[in-house]
Length: 534
Image (tube, rainbow, N blue to C red; front, top):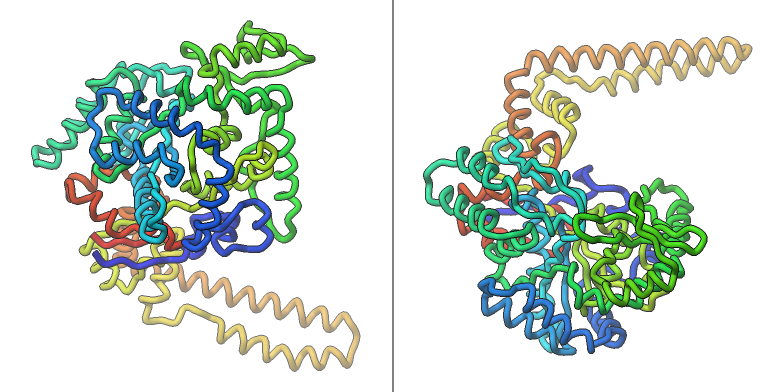
C-alpha cells in the first residue's frame, strides 16, 4: 500500500512539548531516561535486567493465566505468557481505557505499534524476548469517556448509571446498544462478522473487563498480544510497599510538584502541565466505590464517606486488602513498572506529557524509568480520495490545515488572479523611503505624519487583498466545496480521523484484511505521521 510521512510538527495537531521531545530538545532530557532509538534499547534492557525483581515473574505469569481463565488463547499468546518467566524476557506496554467496541481508531495504532516494536527488537536483539502488553484501564471511573463509539457520523452510546471502577460494571443495556448498531449494518459478510463480534463480546460476558479482554483477544491474539488487568489482588500484593510509602510519605506529591515547577521554569516555552498530583495519589475501591484517600492530622478517610482509619489501621487494611487500593494517573505508571519487566511505554501525546512529569518520582522509589515512545498516528485515505486531491492540486499535508486556512490556500492556488499583494506593499514601502529621507531634514512631527500615512496605506492594501480573496472564494465556491467535503470525510469534526472514527467502518470494507494491512505498514520507530492509502 502506498504511504507517505508528515513530520508531527507540520500536522499542527501535536503540542510543542511532544514535538520538542521528538526533536530531542536538550532542555527536556532531564525528564526522561533514554530516547527510543533502536540502539538505545540495549542499555535500557541491561538497566531493567539489573533492577527488576525477577521473583515477581512467577506471580505475574500465574495472574495472567488466571485472568485468561477459560478464554481461548492462541499458541503465540500462550508462549509469550510463558516466556515472561525468564530473565531474558522484557515487555513493551501500552494502556487504554475500556472504550465501547474499542472506541476511536488510535486504539488499534497503539496496540500495533506495541506488537511491531517487539518484532523489531527481537530482530535486533535475538538473545532476548519481547512481549507486547495491553494494560486494560479497568480501574478508571470516568464512564462518560468510554460509553460510546462513532459510526457513520453518529454516536452509538451505552446509557446507564455507573459508579466505581468501570471494569466491574455489568453489561446491563448493551443488548439495546447491539440492536441499534446492528440496525445500521447491511447484510454483507463483513457486516455479519461485525455483528457477531459485538454480540459475542458484549452479550455473552458478565463485566466490562471480561468483555474487553474477549474482544481484544479476538482481534489480536494471533499476534501474541498479552492482555493484563491491573485490578488483581496478587499483582497488587507486589505493590504493597509502594502503596504504604505513598500513604505515609506522600512521595509522589513532593516529587511531581517539584518537576512541574522545573517544567514551568523552562525559558521560551509555555508547556501545559498535564496532571497535578494529590497529596495521596491512590483511590479506595470497594463495591461500586472509587474515591480519593485523604489525610487530616493523622486520620485517613475516604472522600464523601464515613470510612476512617488511623495510620496503623490503614496500613493493616493495605496488608489485608491490597486490591482495594487503586493507583491514580500519577501512581499507575509506577505500579506497571514495578510488576512488569518493562522497557518501553507506548502512548499518545497526552500520556507522554504526564509521563515526563514522573521521572523523579521513579528515582525516589528506585524503579527504572521506561523509554517513552509516541504511538503511531495514521490517516487512512482511499485511492479514490487521493485521486480527487490530485485533480484539485491539493496535497494531503494541506488537509491538516484548519478549514479557513485550507480554503484560503486552495483559492490562491486555483485563482487565475494574483491575490497576494506583497509586491504592491513592497513598492509602497520603497516610495515611502524617500519621504522618510525628507522627514530626517525637518522636525519629528513630519516624520510621524509620514509613518501614520504609510500604516494607513499598507492597511488599505491589506483590506483590498482580503476583499479580493473573499470575492474569489465566492467565485470558486464549487471547487472549495469539493475540497471542504473531502476534508470533512478525512477529518471528522475538524479533528484527526483516528480520534473520531471507529474501526468498524473500515472493517466493513476490508474485513479481516484490515489489521494485517496496518501491521504491514506501521513502523513504531519512524517518528512521523503516517498517511496510508488503502
